[in-house]
Image 1 (cartoon, one colour):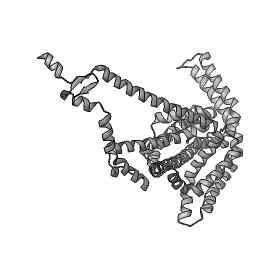
Image 2 (cartoon, helix red, strand yellow):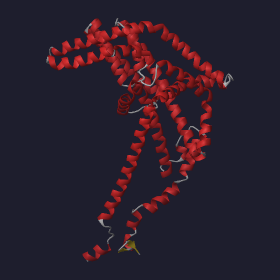
Image 3 (cartoon, one colour):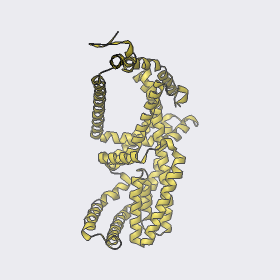
Image 4 (tube, rainbow, N blue to C red):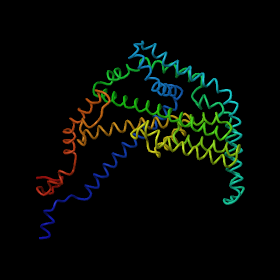
Amino acid sequence: MAETDELTRPHIDRSVVMAAWLKSAAWTSLWMILIAIVVVAALALIGRLWVGVLPIVLALIVSTVLWPPVAFMRKRLRFPAALAAVVGLLVPFVVLGGIIAAIAPSVTSQSADLIDQATKGIRELQRWAQGPPINLRNEQVADLTDQVVGWMQSSSSQIASGVFTGVSAASSGLVTLLLVLVLTFFFLKDGPEFLPWARKVAGRGAGRHITEVATRMWRTLSGFIRTQAIVSAVDAVFIGIGLIVLQVPLGAVLSLLVFLGGFIPIVGAVAVGALAVLVALVANGWATAIGVLVLIIVVQQLESNILQPFLQGKSMQLHAGIILLAVAVGSTLFGVMGAFLAVPAAALFATGVRYASEQIDLRTGEVRPDEVTALTPEGAEANRMAADKIGYYRVQSETTSVAPEVAEAPERKRGRRGWTR
């Protein structure tokens, strides 16, 4: 009886299942290797073409900020496209240029003092660490302190000039600025014509996805930049007021660094906060340094828990680990500018991943088209067409899966070439 049950029980040799798993793993590994090669090649190409890529990226970021007033002038005030682009571009840059020109001399002259104050602060921390209750040995602290101080002193000139022009290995600041202005003008003037052109070139099928993804990425980028600018400005104002009340020197420079550091989440806030504490420690002692530390912690907590969720929303935020990884990779590949652009790039990538996930859910039937919010009519049509492909993928799964063959195994006999009637 046991032998009869063994013969009639559905059976597939273990080697068949293991071979199927290995084949699937091999194909998956091959696709991952190919994708990694494409990503590395793309990054290498961007690095080679960074001279031209950087102005385009900066112009896109500036365009996301300037587009709302330009669109208002074109739709409400009936301005011609070129005139609206010129007005929307020149007015903010003239105002910003006037502010920078007004504070640039004092900031530039105080930047060297800022480096000296930070260096003295590090020396003060060294003396404190050598005393009780830490009692570190002199040689343990001296090596690290000398390295940090040496780097700060050797980089003081770059820090002083980089406050306004940024650290860019691509080209001079003036040439980059001119290219950004010209490209921003054309983006503001001819931007609405891009999506119709993309649909015409790519075709109706791919054009629907391009339209929806580009619209989502544009909204993500514009929301991120505007939110970071508002949050950084609020941080700079409150921390600047606190530094003035506590009578910390170099308050204008530190406030400006707080604003610029806000565009590099987590890392920028920590670095600028540590610098402010060091300056307060040297200038006014431990009590003022602790006060500055408490001030920065309170402002950062209000920003992260109240201001930023209110302005940006939970759906726009990235996990802190992803942000740190993006900043680390961006700064390693492209320096300070890479650290600045890393988080927007990660946010755009996350937007594309979320859209791809929605399309997969539509094709599997887990969600319906009316449950997915589309920003464009083309996106809504793409969602309906994706949902219509459920039958196609069901047939594909039935013809490629091993499960149906195993389920029908009791009605078959084991043959030399597999399961046969």
